Structures are given as C-alpha cells and as structure tokens.
Amino acid sequence: MSLPRFYPIFDSVDWLARLLPLGIRLVQLRVKDLEGADLRAEIIRGQAIARKANCAMVVNDFWQIAIDEGCDWVHLGQEDLDSADIPAIRRAGIKLGISTHDRAELDRAMALKPDYVALGPVYPTILKKMKWHQQGVEKLSEWKALIGDTPLIAIGGMSVERSAGAFAAGADCVSAVTDISLNPDPEARVRAWLKACG
Image (cartoon, rainbow, N blue to C red; front, top):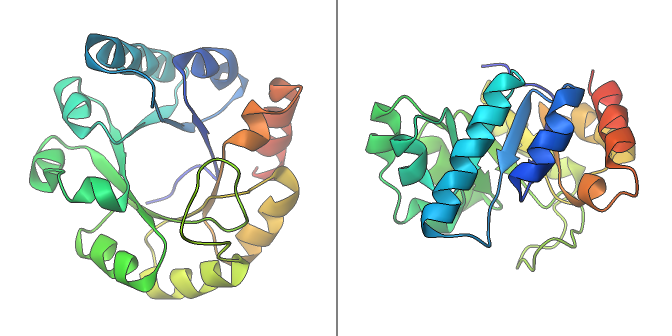
C-alpha cells in the first residue's frame, strides 16, 4: 500500500473544514474532549468533509463508531488494542494503523497485519507525556528494515524542517500535529508541508 507522504492530525473537525481544501489527502481526527452523540456527530461530520475533499480520514481510537458509520480507517494505540475487536474492524473493511514505541509493541502490531505502523516520538513532543523519550531517526531505519513494505509513519516533534531527515531514514509518511495547530499561519504551514512532502 502506498500512502500520501503528509499525514496531519487534528483534534477538531473545524481544522478539517479549514485545511483539507488545501490539498491534504490523509488526515487523522483525534477527538479527546467529546463523548456520546456529540462524538459520533463530530466523526460523521469529519468523514463527510474528508470525502468531499478527496481525503482519507483516520478515526483515532473510536473503532466501534468507525464501523457503525462506515469509516475507512482506524488508528489504535497499544492500550486501545487491549479492547478493540480487530476481526470486526477487518470484517467492516476498515484499514488499520497502529502506534508502536518499542520492539515488543512492533511485534504485537505486525502480528495484526496493519495497514501502517507509526513510530514515535521521533523527536521530543509537547503533545502528551510519554514514557518514551525521543526515538531518533535511526529508529525509523531500524523499524523500516523490520516491517518491509508496510508503510511507516514518523510522528512526534515533527516539523517541515525535520521531514527530509525522516524520509531519508526510511519513513514513508510524516505526521504533524502542533507544528500546524500552534503555527501563527496554519494555512501557510500546511502549504509548506505539502511542498516538502510532494
């Protein structure tokens, strides 16, 4: 499978409506502050916006809603794997991405035949507290040698300026979060990303 090389992650559908028209082709919706009907409505709206923009939307965590609403992708962290019904996700035809941080997690992920594997944090990240410090681009090369044709996503502290190093180390795709959402000009930053990943 070949994925777009740029993979931003946003915490609100408002970001999708604002930035997908610039040419983003793969995006993750990572909603943390909604639940119940509001959460479902956000995912439904995001899916509609993404499809209109010819963009694949990855639902973070909420695999049951993704199945119910006919979504195309789900991303699961290692803790999510403990409770997720992977066969149900696969029966629904949903593609699956999985976070990994160490070799045991990578082995667990690869046993599930994921559609991509994410490695992070490549650099220190301000987004969330993690027990893993920066992995470094060298770990991308190590992971790519182990997973072969499975797409590899570099995430964590990534910026436009660091993307070339991640690609050179073996990443197929680079994910960005705060580099866009905290930028004073998110539109310009997305354009810079698209150029760097073109």
